[in-house]
Length: 329
Image 1 (tube, one colour):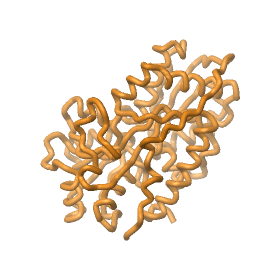
Image 2: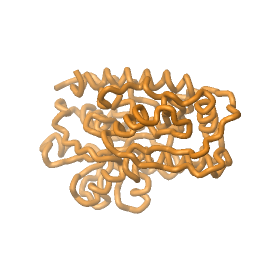
Image 3: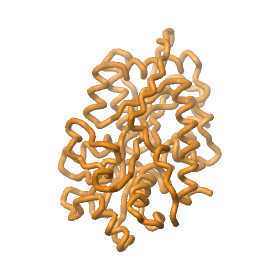
């Protein structure tokens, strides 16, 4: 199967949309809770825990945010829980990302749509990576893709999203850019979160990992994995500057994963505005800029209606891409 990939639909790099939002007064969550729709260790878990800690450290929350890991269905279990059981919970927010938009675009949350929740705000964008274990003989992205092209059964790639999800799409984008016509030959194995996927890589059950910088960072720091490609247009800055891009290896593959939150559809306007304001205030702080820099997050500042429109556009574009690569009809 050959298809023409719409590169601009996947690129968040360079996007500097800033939506201002009036500070909201009069609502304070009594029992703030964040659902991470995956097991501990992945990007959604990072989003909940880091934002919750930062909100409290900076005095934007006066109580500790409880983080609940609710894995399953590439985020579908958590989405259904919010829609069906907690639709008017003013204290609840849920970590979301491009992976969430991807599953919604592909109809992977049966009976659910993006309009059944309220979209709050982003906290940045997380570039995709492809990595191998530290002791792998594979040194570059072309070497990995050559092995896949020669013998697709010899390489299994693990990711924290379901089959057809955003992690899966990233490795397919790279494979297509490298000239692998039938990207369906790429062997992808889905796990409930990036942390679990990396664990399988370290156990030798798979040969490569596809995920995001924030998911990979801790495992790179511990010396367990080696990033062979970042799906960014240019090298990242700071401690990530040593990671080669796919582009500099001759592979035009770009993929950035926005990170943010949604809330129950029945959340009151006061509570919604307060949560949007808190996340916007956090994003504007020097402390959050440091968190972004330390975890490889690129700027992406969207709140309220602007974020709602952005998610709607993302879902539409991912539907187009998914049809092009045969994931949906």
